[in-house]
Image 1 (spheres, one colour):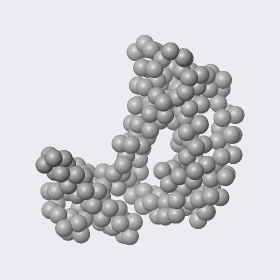
Image 2 (cartoon, helix red, strand yellow):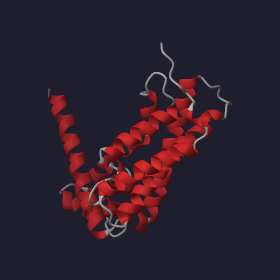
Image 3 (cartoon, helix red, strand yellow):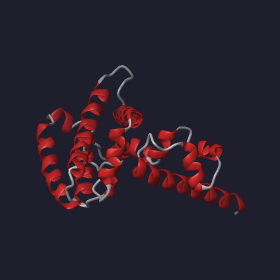
Amino acid sequence: MAEGLRERKKRQTRQYISDVATGLFLERGFEAVTVAEIAEAANVSVNTVYNYFPAKEDLFFDRSAGVADRLARWVRGRDVGESAARAVLRELRSEVEAVSPRIGLMTGYDRFMRVIHEAPALRSRLWSLQQETHDILEATLREETGAADGDPLPDLMAGQICWVHQAVFVAIGREMVAGRKPAEVSREVLVLLDDIEDLLSEKVLNYAVREAV
């Protein structure tokens, strides 16, 4: 029980530091805020901040772990008879139809995107996160299909599926920064997803179909 309480305290402290940092970043910009200022505002030491977040960028992309493996999780959870690409398209449509804040369909997302746009360090970290997403997906596709190590197909297919994901996020980000309402953007992105699916080849759409056990 004591160990559980300690772990809970750590999670609460980490979340609080992250929330304080996010508020400061949105208010003043990423580069204008120092780790020392975050520590002072959160009433903790600078060392405590670094214990939870090794780099300043980690404070902004606090939930990146759940984002990086999202496509791989969707592929692993695909239905029998469903391909990897179709599983991702289905999950994206579900998120868009629900006007989910997980994909940026929320009031205030424009501020989040502006902070990234104004900070080269965050743009660089975002690129790294996109690459990590691709690499995790490639490894998953390779495992799911039993492809040999030298087979280039999982890498190519991961690139195609990541493009689908990225195209949706770019469209949402662009429209939200323009001041559009989440529900309006949702309707337009559903049409975009249909267009994206039409552009994908049958080879992509039928890759890694889950067979019945």
